Length: 153
View 1 (cartoon, rainbow, N blue to C red):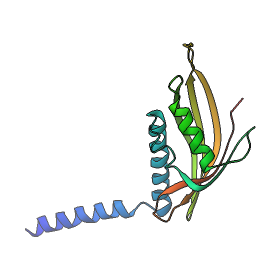
View 2: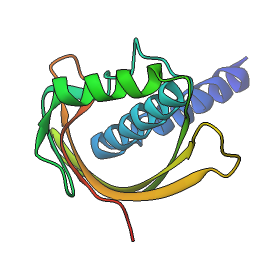
View 3: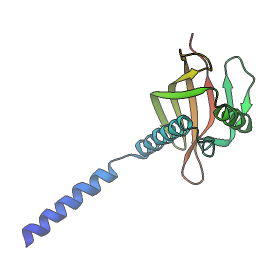
View 4: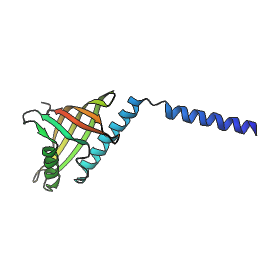
């Protein structure tokens, strides 16, 4: 009986150590990776109801060659693009690095957008390197507050 008690105690200690071993920065990185993966899935599924969930209301973004835009601008663009059934869009994500500092995080990444236009069988692929700045929200979620992106040559 004591042997079983000790075995159970040891197992509980190992489990609690594993759960506590993740640092706040590690937990933030996991949450940010999850948010980016969810957004990718929502975009690829054309889920316009959730497509803006990744972005904070105070979002400001720069995409090379276009004027600076806001949350409302981006959400409108995403919803219009996904409503256009004549085109097929698919995003793939390559996270290069995540740096977390307190309630802020920076993600260096590359989005690959594949677009198939009507009347063509050859998809067009563009690589979009960027830098996303996340801030932890009052509800504990991580959302993009700033991003800079450009199409790679």
